[in-house]
Image 1 (cartoon, one colour):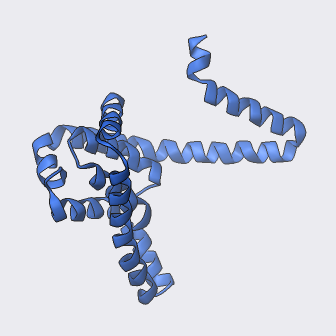
Image 2: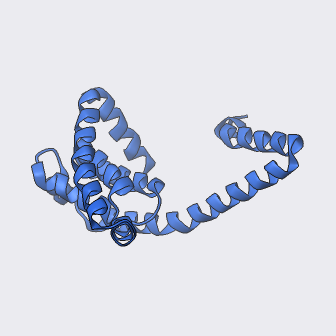
Length: 177
């Protein structure tokens, strides 16, 4: 019974997919193909992310992370969070395991949020694509708007989270690794 409870989400999705196939076979087959493609993409992205996580966890001491991105890191923590997020590659779900390692290493909560925001919004490859496809004016304007927006949102979100909730989030991140 605990196995069923543990995988209830997966079982629920499988039942829903089966119902879709029964109701409309063509749509069901299409849904299975989309799910398969997403799973394949995820399996190609996550192993390198986890290898990098292992290296980060072993090679970078907690004290170093706290110095550059911790509670007293100030502007350098913000800049480093943006640079690390912007230099990333891959879909957003790749950012969350890295964010968990950052939490384990004592990175300030707002810097973790800035990192996730930068990962999702300011990637260098995306900027280069926009530069060539949409023009420099658009690409630079988007960055000039997005970067302060990411920082502002991170600080607003972290101000709404009390210390107890933040500690719970950090403890959950610690359990994941």
